[in-house]
Length: 150
Image 1 (cartoon, rainbow, N blue to C red):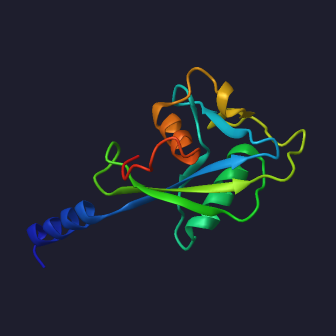
Image 2 (image 1 turned 180 degrees about the horizontal axis):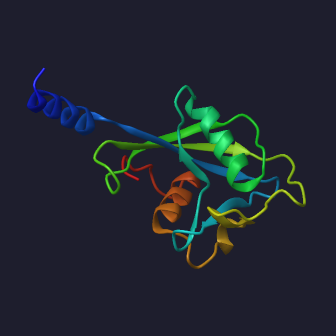
Image 3 (image 1 turned 30 degrees about the horizontal axis):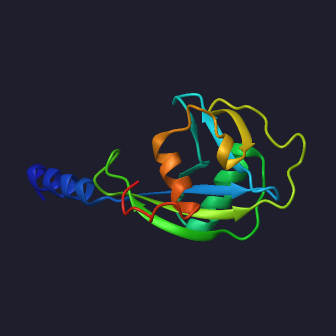
């Protein structure tokens, strides 16, 4: 195989590669929503991240929730799947609902990635909650239909 052919095949694979991530709408018994503040982004977001090789979407949702916040949740329920055109032409994000039965007092410890995590009432969200997070919260509440785009 020629070097040019290898380059064309590699470029084709990159163009066709799809990335897959999850976000988690975790709520406590009072109906408060769990949000995180990253070290590398401004604002507050739903916890989440990439799906690892060999991992189901639901497994990734629970793992990311636990890794980013120290909180464990019940069975994740798929809410919607979105196309995230902002980061990559083939990036998709699955949004899960997760009920949190109990929040340990010392559940969250700041890390290099996540600086803060907290539960917020839907009507008292931090003022710098990200626009995409606000759209997802409105969809979850039934205030707007789910968009196909993140």
